[in-house]
Image (cartoon, rainbow, N blue to C red):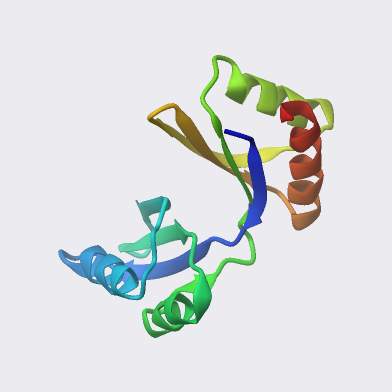
Length: 140
């Protein structure tokens, strides 16, 4: 498996903090064909829940997102890395970014059946692009 790096849009919504809200949102997106690989839900200060998710692709998924109150986040500058799992992979990526003085604001990673999928959040779109290019050279 080759390394795949891409800039990725993250979508966000604020949900009422009550049973069934997240289930409804995820069911509706599933019916639109969304195959989500990134979902983070966390409480907000307002007593609600903020959900972040990706990817959403195609008109049906984007229409469903709009109906559900999801919006593409303007502050989530994210690079998605899909790679074969290897010891030290995350350390190599973080060292590469650090050596370029690129700050990582957030990171979500998982490994399933030897394949790692990593979502890295950056300070800016420029940092995300620079980080993507630097990691591409390091990982290939």
